[in-house]
Image (cartoon, rainbow, N blue to C red):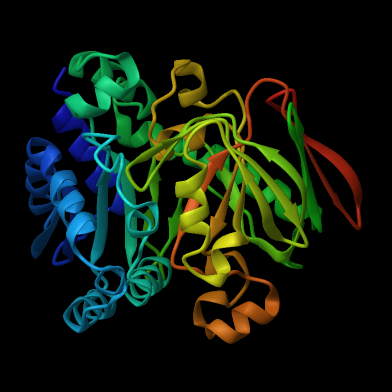
Length: 399
């Protein structure tokens, strides 16, 4: 089976759904070269007018962190802001290939510098991809990523796992994703109908209640842009999600999957929330890099997403830890600190930052997902229609 060709086809056709004459931005790593070439080929075959690759590289990033000053790492560059805004105005498609070639490339680096972000650039990208562009993020297999999972660079074994998770083993993967997207959209509609005001996550080490914004919308499966073109922001995706009220999160949370953050591995992460804010951080490994990211801006310590995933997930059924947030977040329920999704509230995309903030949406230069789900997790929702079970012992039970 030609995994790479099938992968590229799903990314281009089910992911961003490239249209004839459209421009495409491809964010990728040097470790993904062969896959990136296949994605470019598929994009042009679908009618793309141009494809602009934006390359990253782990060792080059380490050089930057080691030698640039903190101010230089945080300084925004006018030409980057300009081109990002122009891509947004043109309605380009935005593809991001993820999959760390070396999860330890920043081991020993200054955690504050490793977590540094060019905040204005981050905001410009988020405004573009969350409001004007069709976008998708997809994990790209590489030997380094395989080594993180299996202890050896068994790329074929990784492709088998990714192929299952991404439904590349189906006769028609694009159609298979359209069917899965429809199921997730039905779940989102059922949650919308409940008019929930809060959700509560309970499991081993977790008891967290999160308030929701009145009238918020639950998204599942995929989205539709202003021109009516469907796309899938993440592949694989097994979630329904929304953005909560940033000021209403209280309790404790135990992260059930390892997290790769700023080139570092975080395990056994435990968070305490009070009044929406993360007030305490503990971990078996990597607490310092989490603290460094939470200090990047005021919004980093508040939630921007709550998400529901059950054991029916293809990623959960794979039974392995992918050491990649895009995959692992779809193995179980998760939340994310940092940036909210403006589309989670009616008219949110057109609002100013101040208007979004007044509603309770969070603003930040970061958005980091952490998994709280798995065996034993229960999620209930409460609102004017009462309290209902949504997930019980990791099984979706809401009708």
